[in-house]
Length: 191
Image (cartoon, rainbow, N blue to C red; front, side, top):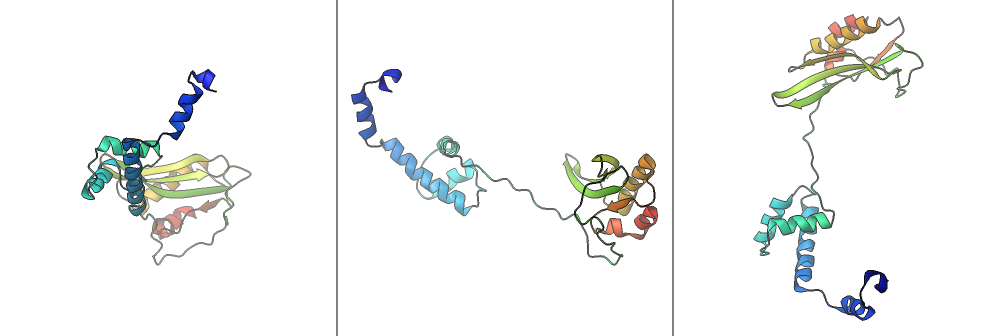
């Protein structure tokens, strides 16, 4: 191996038995503190914040060194988004039984539909998107977008799906138990 790399075997043995340099020892101490901070912050502290914490405990090192140690040791920041609750199940409307029972496959088109409401962040604020899928083809057959979440938004998506597909009697429409889907107006369009 030494001949391939072009070093003497004596030099390799000397390198292996050489004690760690001051810089390597300092990096090991710093890395231990970085790992501890990462554990205590549940992975939410990034390079600048970890550098500030290290300076507070008396280690005077720069943010580039902290970034290098984090990168070399696979320490990354866990980015989390605030969870936004989209379903209002606390309402007085009737709730339909779950006919699909987690069987989201269909043999033919217009046999089973599924719908949901989602939020999309844009530069101008949150947008609400209602989508209805045909579970046979997984195609979007109805959708509607608005900056306000009202039941007419869900009704618009349903009407688009009905006009686009003209389903026969017996088509199952599956959604969550949100108030938009359980409202009287939505149920009337479904019937």
